[in-house]
Amino acid sequence: MDNNVSEIDDPNFFFADDGATNPKHELEATLDAFFLDEKRDDNSSICRFPARYAWLQKELNATDFPSAVCSEYDKIFDRVDPKSTTLVFPAAHINSPASMFGHTFLRINSSYHSKLLSYAVNYAANANADTENGVVFAIKGLVGGYYGRYSLLPYYEKLKEYRDSEQRDIWEYDLDLSQAETVRMFRHIWELNGTNSYYYFFTENCSYNMLWLIEAARPNLHLREQFFYDVIPLETVHVVKGVGIVKSEHYRPSKRTKLLKYEELLDEKNLALPIELVEAKITAKEVMQDKNISVEQKRYIFESAIEYLEYQYSKGKVKKEQYLKLFHAITLQRAKLGVGKPLDIQTPPNPVDGHRAVRVQAGVGQRDGETITFLGIRPAYHDLEDSGYGFLRGTQIEFMNLLFSYSNDSFRVEKADIISIVSIAQRTNFFKNFSWRTHIGWDNDYLSDKAAFTASVGAGYSWGNEYGYIYFLVDPLLYQNSSFHAGIGGSVGLNIDKYKDFNTNIELTQRLYDSGDDQLLIKIAQGFRLEQNLQLLLKYDYKDKVIAKRKKGEDTLRLMLKYYF
Image 1 (tube, rainbow, N blue to C red):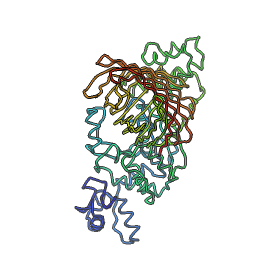
Image 2: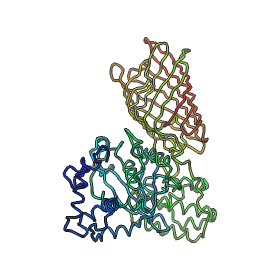
Image 3: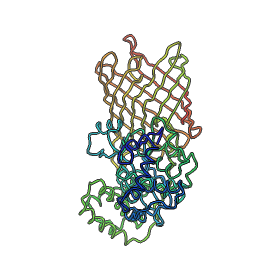
Image 4: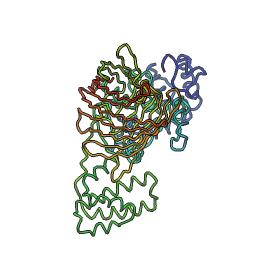
C-alpha cells in the first residue's frame, strides 16, 4: 500500500468498504471478521487471510486469538513445503517482441533435492497473446485493459514453457530469504489467490509484483521505490542484486542453446540426420547400422534428434502418436550406445553483468568540416551499437530514444524514436529463423536536411558464427516530408561481437523513393566497453542528401561517451 491506497483492485480482498484507501478501517474490519466470523473452517476469514492473521497475532502478542482448521491451506502448504526463495529470469526470445525484455518469476524451494519439484509463482496478464489481435493486446496491456493473475505450479512446468517451447535460457538467482521469510511470502501469495488487479505492461507487471512478494517476505526491503515510470524485468534483477540479497546464481540452457551446441559437435556430413530422423525420412536403425558414422557421432545424432523432436512436439509440429513412436525408436537405439560425454555448454555472460537500461550520451564530432556536438537520452533499453555483453545477440528494443546536435548556432534533431525493434536471428541447421526490424519515429536518414517522420517494417535473413554475423534486409518505408512518401531499402550489415569489450557494426543501405530519387546510407560504428555501464563509441555516417535540388553527400564523424544507469 502506497499513500494509503492499495494496489489490489479487487474489492473482495478487503473487509471494509473503503479498505483499499483507509487502512485503519480495514484493520478494524479484519479484527471484527476474525473474532466474529462463525465459520471456523476453510471458508473462514482466518483461513482466507493467513498472512494478516499471523501478523496481527504477533503484533498484538495475543494468547487468546481465535483459531480455525484450515485443511485446504495446510494441504497446499505441505505440498509446496516452503524453505527458501529463488528469483528466476527467463532471458529474451529472439523472434518475440513481447519477450525481448525477459521475464521474472519466483521459485519457492522445498526440501526436495531436485529443484524441478519445487513450485513457481508467476504473475501475468489474464489474456492469451497468441489468440488475441496483436495490436489490441498491446494497447490493452498499456492502459490496464487486463487483470493480472497469480499462478502456482510445478517449476518443471514453467521450464517447459520458457526453456523448451520458447527457446529462452534460464537464470536462477538464489535469495538469502530465510525459511520464516519464505513462509511469510507464501501466506501473502495465498491471500492473493483469485484476486484481480489491473495489469500494466510497463509498471504493474510481472516483475513489479515479484518485487512486491519479496518485500512481503522481508518488509524492510524497499525494492519498488527504485522504479518510477517503467519496471523492466532485467532491471529488477539488477535492483535485487544491488541490495545484496542474491547469494548464488545458476544457468539452465534452453533447447535452442543445446541444439546449437550439437551443431558444433556434429560432423558436417551428419548435420541433416537428426532432422531427417524427426521427419521420418530415415530410421534410427539405419543410422545405427551405418558403419561410416563413429559411435560418438551416433550419440550426438540421436541425442540432438531427441531434443529436436521434443522441441517440435512442444510447438505442435509433431502429433502425439508420432512423437511417442519416434521417441521410443530413437531413445532405444541411443541406449545401446552406452554413456557418452556430457554436453559441455559454456555458461554465457550473465544478463545482470550487462549494462543498465537508461542511457545518456554526449559527444563531439565533425560534419562536412564543421565541429558539431551531440547530446542524447534513452529511457530503455538496448541497441545493436551498445555492448552486447549479457544480452541476446542480434536484438534491439528502444523506446523514446532522443539524440540532438548543435553546430554553428544550428540545433538539429538527429533522432526522436518512438519505438525501434530489431531481431537479427541467425539461421542454423535446426532453426530457420527470419530476421526483421521495425521503426516508428523521426530521424535524419532521409534526403532532406531535417528530421522526417518515418515508419518502416523490414525482413530478411542472417547467418553467423562465433565471431559475428551478417544480415540482409529489405525495408519498405513511409516517411513524411511536407507530404507522405513511400520508399524501399535494401541493407547488408556486419556485426562483430566475438570480444567482450569491442563490438563493430557496419551497415550499407541503398534506398529508392517514389519520387525516383535514390539514396546511399553507410554506417560504421566501433564500440569500446570501458566498464559495465560506460561505453565509448566511434561512429562514421555517410548519407546522400538533396539540398536545393542538388544531390550531395553528407559525412559525419563522431566520438560519443555513453553512460547507463
